[in-house]
Structures are given as structure tokens and as C-alpha cells.
Picture (cartoon, rainbow, N blue to C red):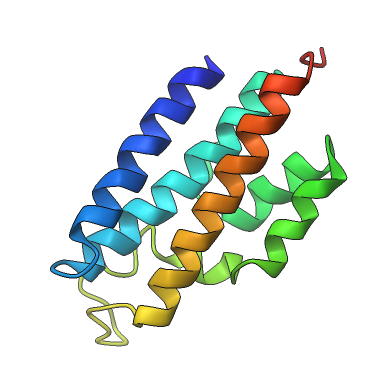
Length: 130
């Protein structure tokens, strides 16, 4: 099942990268989705019951309880900002913010790449816990 999570995450990441310049609001959503799915892939691999959450910080914390290296992801990007990408730009909002800052998109992209690398390496090198 974890490979399906990675496959889905890769598709979100690819789409985000493709639309990053023309539709940054949609890119933000898909970067958040990719980050979420990469982390859920790792948790799924370790047979952790997945919560219905979009919170990247919560998922990274859950992963770090299995492998403390995942705590390094907090230094890659603002996980709260990435979490907000799940809804902030998909709907009209009171802040009247329609598009993410370019730096935030770059940060979210970096987070996805770091998360994917950590997940893929650890799934390849690890026997799942029960």
C-alpha cells in the first residue's frame, strides 16, 4: 500500500511543478497533497493507523516517532504554512489572499523533495514494524 501512496504523491508533485508558474494557487494545494501523501506512505509502510488529517506537522511528528530523522523536516519548511495550502487557496478566504508567495512555493517544493527522499530510502532499507 505504501507504494500506492508514493505513486499518488508523485502525481501531485508532478502536477504542482507543472502548474507552478501559471497557477500558483493550485500548485500550493498539490504540493501540500504530495507532502501529506509521502508522509502517509511511510506511516502506512509501518502499519500506523492513518488519521484523517492534512496536518503536515502532525504527520511528520508521527513519522519521527518511528525514525527520529524525520524531525529534520521541520527545518526544511514551515509545516504550518504547507498545511494551510490544503484549503487556503482553494476557496475564497477572509484574508483575501489568492496566491502563495513564490518563496512559500519553493519551500513547499523543497519539503516534498526532502520528504520523498527520506521515505523512499527508509522504505527500501527497512522492514516494516508491526
